[in-house]
Length: 218
Image (cartoon, rainbow, N blue to C red; front, side, top):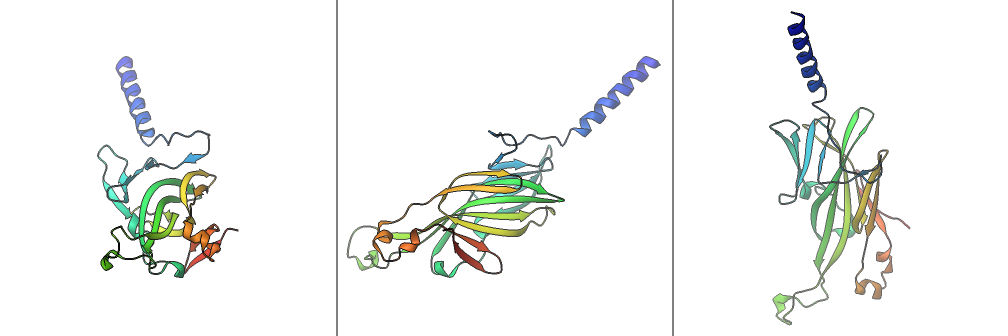
């Protein structure tokens, strides 16, 4: 009886241990301990966050043997109708690139990063409709990096809490102690350098709140 009792007790202990570690999970491979790197797949042990480039959306699934879809956030809808006055009349594309997860006090946050491209036809160039020349019309615009912070404490209803845009393409990003550090790179068009509007070369960022406000970094 002691033997069988011991086996039963051991099996129960092993089963209990398996249940206690069922939510253990690995994180993105990092180069420096404590500094997280952006990725297209993240998990907090309870949910899995996946960026689908074909659909341009981040989809949230349950972290189970048979994952269930909870909700999705579409890249093109991240800014809604928000826009600064300088870019009124521009066409706009928003494409998700990668993301971070972090926890602050009792709240969980999802940080989405996207590339934003604004463009319009240069009105000074002949249009194809006029059949003056046989080349494509020149388009010009702005390329920026969008950072969208969502409160996902209620996983069913992610809430946008803050959004920023920084001019230039994102080269790299890191998360440390709840702060996101981003390095961007911005080129410029020759016509801007030759024009009187040389302020266009200066770095800037856009902060979204009740209004969209463009601010210079220098």
